[in-house]
Amino acid sequence: MCCSFNFQGRNIRPSDNATVLTAVSSPLQLQFGFRLPDGRMVINARSETAMEKPMFRNLLRYRRVVIPADCFHEWDKSKAKYTFTLPDRQQMFFAGFRDQNSFVILA
Figure 1 (cartoon, rainbow, N blue to C red):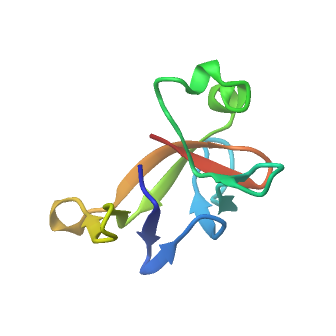
Figure 2: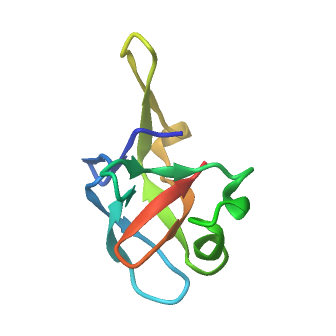
């Protein structure tokens, strides 16, 4: 899905802190992406397989979040950037889930 997104005029990239919303607490500032032991980052989970993955299963069940965004960006193979927004620049929300300090987007 997205490689980065904007929220309140700020571009959020993997490993940046961003605001997430939960049903049980005030907004949280968490890191975008789960860091793997080898240093790579996981920034999204595929909705079709997330419940099958041990890394995501319980977090998806019990630690859901909503990620507000003004837009999101993707790049094609030639590195051309595409920005996606809703009509009239309405705010959009991504589904996601979190661990203690970070979150991923459910794609």
